Image (cartoon, rainbow, N blue to C red):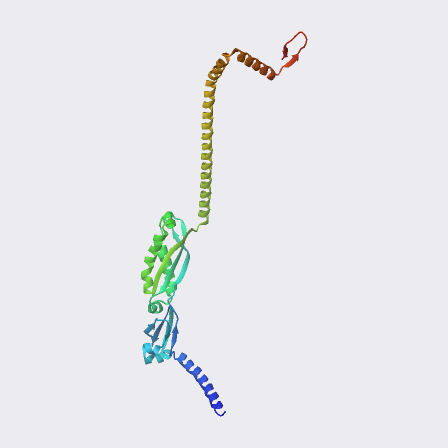
Length: 290
């Protein structure tokens, strides 16, 4: 049981010593863990001595030698993220060739490809890049025809990117995708006037379509009436011939002809609006009073 005390004391001293060593290691930056898409730039007495780009655990003393122990006292480590940044600039004012004030919204991507230039070439590289993009938009899109601003966004976006890329590379940036997402009118009076013209045009188109439909229906009706009139005229023209031919066939048999005409006479009498008086006795016959 005598070894329990020394064992416990050794465990305590080891535990405390481990924390002390870890604290000293962090204070003197004996090791560091570098995340993905991150670069650490080291300076010593105000001069850049190197950078570390590979993610994972690394030891500065391996990369820079014994002077890495003095970095916490006489140097500095700058952490730069190289992830893709996205920005959107709204309502950049440009004037079309017709004098219409237009608001342009442009979206672009950027990422750091030169950490040293990003840190020491410009005190506010992101703000300067945004200002440069806004200036390029005004320069490339001003005094263009309105239809070009509204239709040729792809070509205009490429022009803006070509304009900004050389300057952005000097500040350590690489300008990625650039696209003009919105071109809108800024003058409310002009917007109201365009809406009024569009509504009037829609009304004109609707009225023209309705009139064209009515004209088409009228043409169909007139064509049907014309054909019906032709058919009725043809029927009236051939009716006497048909009736005459039928009567001629009936006259060949006198008994049939007499019965037919008697029947027709009776039908005509029955259809008449006059009064019928039937008499009996010696006087036979039929008296029709109209």
